[in-house]
Amino acid sequence: MSGKRSIFEEVSDASPKPAAQPGLIDAGKQGARGAIRIWLIVLFALVVVMIAVGGLTRLTDSGLSITEWRPLTGAIPPLTPEDWDREFGLYQQIDEWRIQNQWMTLADFKVIYWWEWGHRQLGRVIGLVWALGFFWFLIRRQIPTGWTGRLFFIGALGGVQGGIGWWMVSSGVTQGEGAVDVASYRLATHLGLAFVILGFIAWYVFLLGRQKRDLMQARRARETRQFSLSTGLMHFAFLQILIGALVAGIDAGRSYTDWPLMGGQVFPASALVLEPVWRNFFESPGLVQFIHRVTGYLLLIFGVIVWLKGRKSAHEKTRFAFNAVMSVLALQIVLGIVTVLYGAPWQIAIAHQVLAVALWVLILRARYLSAYPVATSIKGA
Image 1: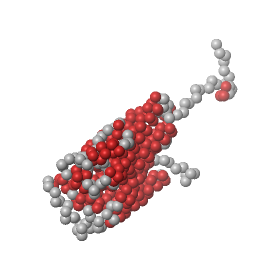
Image 2 (image 1 turned 45 degrees about the vertical axis):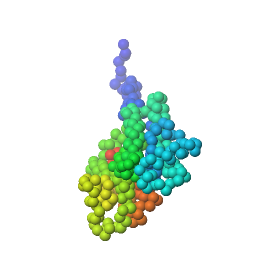
Image 3 (image 1 turned 120 degrees about the horizontal axis):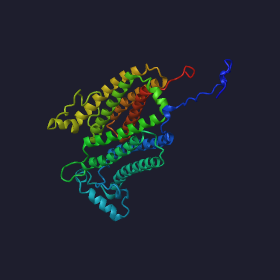
Image 4 (image 1 turned 90 degrees about the horizontal axis):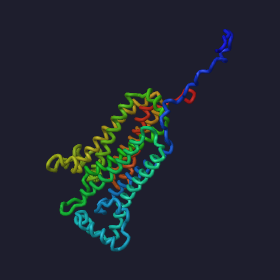
């Protein structure tokens, strides 16, 4: 039995209480967040290159040079003269060659073949990088809690993208149907999914850049109105990207090269010449370019509204993010006009597409910082 304790006993002599356990928010499995983030950044860079190469493949009319879909054996290019003769022979059977490319020699064919082969090969490389990274972290049990499904989802989207790529190409690999290009709506689907994949990767990179406890704290300071507006801008920009793909799919950017009018008119005379009427929204160069222009003007107006709200944010990094969005959006509008005035040469057209990638990511960044703002201390400021 313990003895009596003096009323004058020092508090420090008492039995110590159990120490508090900090970091309970992060008590779950954290995994290799930094390494996974680097892997995702590599994937992000590869997808950006893939979008650029895909755009150049379209601008050089190379997309139909490979008429078969061989996911595995297609990685091996023609190695002998007989192999090249076979590939060229297959190409000579489709409408694109019979209608517009009969002038081509084998040497000319090789140029467009290598563009398309490189495009497909890059897709295989992206798939391989994803698979190696995902299963490496999975086997080593280094994936943070709740992230396995997210990382697998990226790979699943990549697999779907490969199938959509062939679905797109098959619409132009025709005989006797008069098709010399892929269907524009299939091209828009293909490009749109590429931007979706890029968007998810970017979002995951943003999230993995901070610890879970930091994100939970930051979420309490979410600027709801700003987040909603940036979400709307994200969807609006995505719509414009899809319409831009329709423009590229039918070379509509080269149909009217004056601005702000189109052929001297506000509404182009050739906008509704096809029957039935719905075909004009996909196949009429005049109407598709007109829609792309008007959507661009509306996107700029809405972008200014979002920017005016974003620049009032209480957080410095968030304000900077919205300023960056507004700057690139304005530059993109100017570059779009220049693209039209010069008849969409490939150098300007590809710059217009790559800048769309930058704008897309900057909008996502501004949206992320609205949801998870980074507080700036008074001392730091």
